[in-house]
Each structure stands twice: as C-alpha cells, then as structure tokens.
Length: 154
Image 1 (cartoon, rainbow, N blue to C red):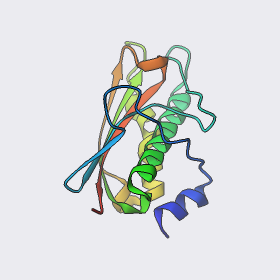
Image 2: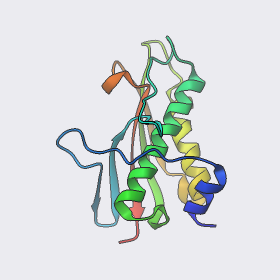
Image 3: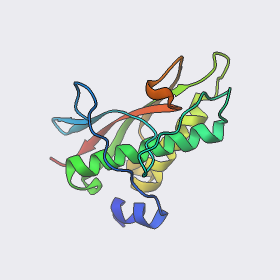
Image 4: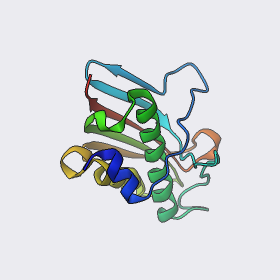
C-alpha cells in the first residue's frame, strides 16, 4: 500500500500547504534530501493550535499539535514533490515544544509527529532520527513547530 493510500485509510485530512510568510522556502531539495522548514500545527480550516504545554495545554494536546504539524509537513511535501509517495525515507524530525521551564516530556509531545510518519510510511521508512526540545516561545503562540529531512526520489 502506498503512503498516500495509507494516509487516506488512516482518515487524516491534510491542511492546505502552508505558504512562506518570510524569506524562506517551505521545502528545498539538495541532492536526494528534501528539507522542510519549521511547520506549525495548522488545522484544515487555517486555525492553529496554541498554548503552553505544562501550563494551559496537556501532553496529549501537545501530541495532537505535533501530529497536526506533521500533517502540514506532508501537505508541503505533497505540493512540492507532487506526491508523498516520492518519500523514500524519513531521515530526521526536529520538534520544538512551547512549554514551561520545568516541563520534561518533550519526546512524548513530538511522538505525535513521529508516530504519524511511522503510520503513513511504515516502520522501515517512516522512523528516522529525532530531536525534541523545549523552547520559551514559538511563532503565533503555537504549541509546537516541527521540521523534517526526507530522502526522496529525484
């Protein structure tokens, strides 16, 4: 089953592919690696998931936000590559969590994106390296920002 078929079977709805709101590209391929810029938890209706994990948002809400940021990444990949089926491997996911100073469960939050990639691309292709860090602020007050590196067909 292809990644696009799996995504459909899982019942996830991709948000619109985010447009650059500054001087950067949402995705850029160098050689056979496609780098995505940081993606926010963009909902299909254009709204964002906001808050501070450990203060006014739970780990579960952060997880959902990271999954939503992952869906935004998939939307960018689909628009940029023409199909997410061109992804040969998830190489790295880097997730930033807007959280309180004493919050230490960033990996549990970023699992929202990592587990999405594993489900969509399968365990062999969809699990790569990862970093999950806490930050003092994120654009627009969103819960998470996630970027990725993907090996792609060129």
